[in-house]
Image (cartoon, helix red, strand yellow):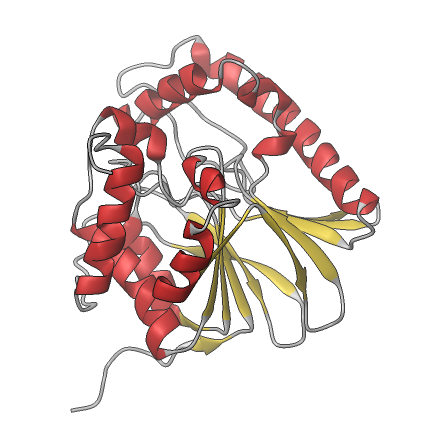
Length: 294
């Protein structure tokens, strides 16, 4: 019997950020659908792949987390996809691994490259800085980052914050009424976005590069500004989407792609809960939750 699912679209590279695995509001089923929709040789996970801040407070690792993890490992093992994991602020403990012997061990055992930043050479010869972007977030990261994040996460989980998309920066809505925080966030997010974008492009230009591919702000965008390309991958938090990623086509052109939220849709994709994925989950639990384990 023929497979009713459409053939995957062939691209060169796929960039995803802010999966926030371990966050109850993460739409990881939609991540799997996107991974199945495309065929690619390079996969970049551009920071905050794991929400360590959440896992430190409360362990939450469901089948969706395990399925996404298993699919990423399968792509590396069976399809020979080159997988690069960029560290972010929510999975900042991965940065502690960078100077240790664990980094080459993880590469050898799981095939996952862990980096704080990389330079990606596109097919058209352009070079992009790939990093999470929290380094450019002067307002949220310095000092009070986790407190503000906890507030934002609570608003997200309760449904007061609607997903950010390229055409509508932010909208905060109560189920019964709009409240005063809405104007504060709507007024602040564009300013944060412009400052973030300017600092990111300045860093890419200073390094002599053609642009930057990042995440962190949850504000998807693909634009040309000041002679450089600014690409933000968006996020996968909230189940009423839409969600975004950056695709590099075979000719080197970048595209901001969009996928629908999961909603109540039942997945027809196979489960990916294998021994290798279980081993990685154990490592994650050791890093962020079970302090008693060596």
